[in-house]
Image: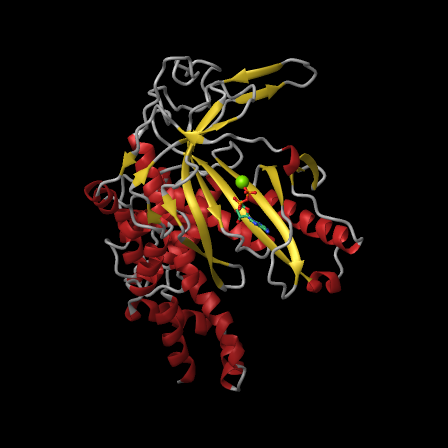
Length: 486
Ligand code: ADP
Ligand code: MG
């Protein structure tokens, strides 16, 4: 653990490189299927394998996805895109090179606003987003000396999102990744699944003396398979580098690997023995030109972004920030809620239903909102039923809601009638019930009249019991107080 003193002496600096696998049907430079989980080495044509004489072709959809992400991240879009070969040898790289964007990434600059747990906001500057392709996968089975290679992943379209060294705490890195995941999912460009490797992150970490004008030497950490592990790896490097510096040692520019079991990192390779990638322009691909017309058509087809829905929920529906945050966290939930709001104008009640009973149901069953059995129309009529005070919220959320989850043959009102849940809000039918309660509790009534006002709750309990829970609490309280005061 770092002492508070050392923590205050140095400034942590973090830059992230995030790879996102694109959800296209085919690969980046060939028509091979881009499916996950297929039998190894079944999605590989001569193009994916880079056989001599084969020619790559750029996947148009992948370019559109990269532009979508760039627009969502406020980047400038490069119109004239060239590709480069990055040469290196690795068993899972069948071509012996990767086709990537070296100079002139498709998206330049940009920023991503993030929100931290304490509610503060920060805008994280991006350096670029570029297009490239994934390599295959080496598989090392326990106890085996041979390495297996699956080339199915080779050629999977990727975008790499590179931040400026703009992040300052592990928490900020975590929030940034969460925001990126939210964005790619909203945009339908990547499933955002870090455990399965569709979203991967390398963290660059350095420290400098507080107030210094130059960044310190950085290390790059790889192989974290969750946001939490990215934050753990950064904190580990934070402490390790400060201890190095305090011991008068030098930080080596190197790539390190994270071990989730121990929460520590180990050196993989230093930048000295780094490959010379011998980048050169890919001779088999002509430049991809993004015309004004194409760019505009992508702009027009952009789906709503989390921020826009958040703003709509706050400004148009008048919801608190907390509700809007919850509701815009996932696109499916946000759009479902938005549809619900076309059926009711009681937005706050609608939000409460989403954050309460609906969320509990989804959590308990592990279902997505798309699988939620009650339609927005039906839920809206249940909300209206509560609003009209025909049924209490507890009867609606406990009894009618669970009936609806089973079947929607009956409307909420029909269920309320069948189960005898319609509230007694009619004073003339409530009055005899209350009078009976008072007649049965003459001594308590006297105590109340002599000042023990706290007995009101007891009387209310009796009234609810006598009415089988159907007394409208507001009307009953009013009537009860009137009768007691007389
Ligand atoms: P490299 O040439 O080593 O790949 P780049 O300049 O391309 O380095 O930056 C790669 C990533 O490292 C970027 O995300 C960038 O923000 C981050 N980075 C650069 N310098 C630092 C630093 N001193 N501390 C932390 N991160 C850094
Ligand atoms: Mg790099």
